[in-house]
Length: 98
Image (spheres, rainbow, N blue to C red):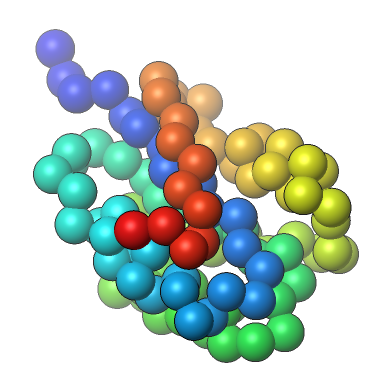
């Protein structure tokens, strides 16, 4: 039996001060089979650039850009809609968490 797929989701907006450390902490986890979805809610700082640089280095990381700014609940619902249909578990990690 293979390991279940875990989806990790980080919705973010203007969190460049913390986002890199957050992403690094997720990628240091020992669970091997996961996808990491970073959802940019129209950031105006370097957050999107940071997220894209990690996505370019690790195939488990995917960046999704919201086309327009969403309130927190709508943004989180939209972010959760991005997870793989094969995923058995999901974890939301706030952009300032490590």
